[in-house]
Image 1 (cartoon, rainbow, N blue to C red):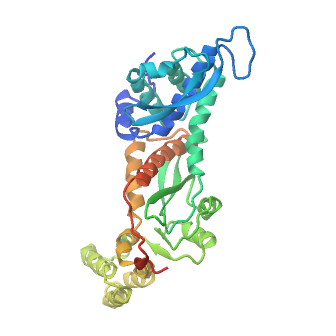
Image 2 (spheres, rainbow, N blue to C red; image 1 turned 180 degrees about the vertical axis):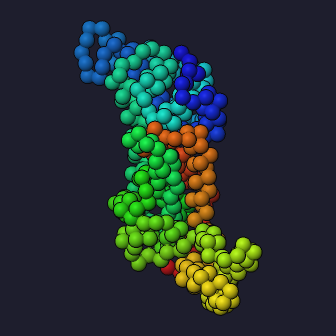
Image 3 (cartoon, rainbow, N blue to C red; image 1 turned 90 degrees about the vertical axis):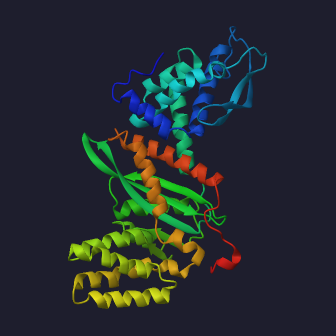
Length: 391
């Protein structure tokens, strides 16, 4: 059985996605491997769980962990055991021979949305025999259960909370619409970064942001000392409603970009950018506010609308000055999430248009889950030594 007969996506694009975008999804692969092996043991025994039959060939005897070396990574699977012996899963005998077919098929599954036909093909390739629709449904559900469990895991204390949104094209009710992907990341007291949540909605209205932020609260987020975000539509009101009283740092990078809309002449762009950078790069808040006052006065007569905008908006980007000097570079923008956005875009550009919201959430959740795992095993992002923390 081969998987090169894709009718909707060129195989070269699928292979690019596998090579660039699906190299580190060991948990999802492990789930599918485990389900395929359980199905194969059931077929070997000749009966289902707790069934009695004269044709029974043996009895299930739990599972034994085994680390399998794959191109994705080392994956620890749960190998089904048979009390009387004589059973060994076909998937482990095939090893690398079935892995390429598996990775390509999973790539298409996550692009198109999991379909029974695709999962059937994968599981039959792994088991080496035909499978029933109920067995396929169970394997499909397990894949989504893994992502759902990750999206709903407890959060705990988070010192810095970053919020951002991006848009993906999704087909809904026969129309192609831009769906808002709401995302949250943070830095915990150990100094490690974490992906905290993701949600899909059809816009950035306050109600959607509020629902998303409230879900973080329900999962136990606490200890927040600063929220970093752009001035997204709906986010401000939702943030005040759910996290009222917590200081907010408006992303300096986006503030500087927003200023361009208020510059009356193109020739002033570089000068204004330099003036704003001088404010943001000041050694402390007092000096930053003094710089801001000077540039407001500077543009009052030549660019009055710009001066008004600077006076009313730039202070929202100065909250980082109230936090440790060693942290400011990391907390004055939400560029960390912007880099994640670029990584998501690198992978979702293969899709172009998602067939539904579920498939969009599935792929982006898989990407974010991968990033979160790397962060948790990676270096400390910020130091929280006692002498550096004013709170």
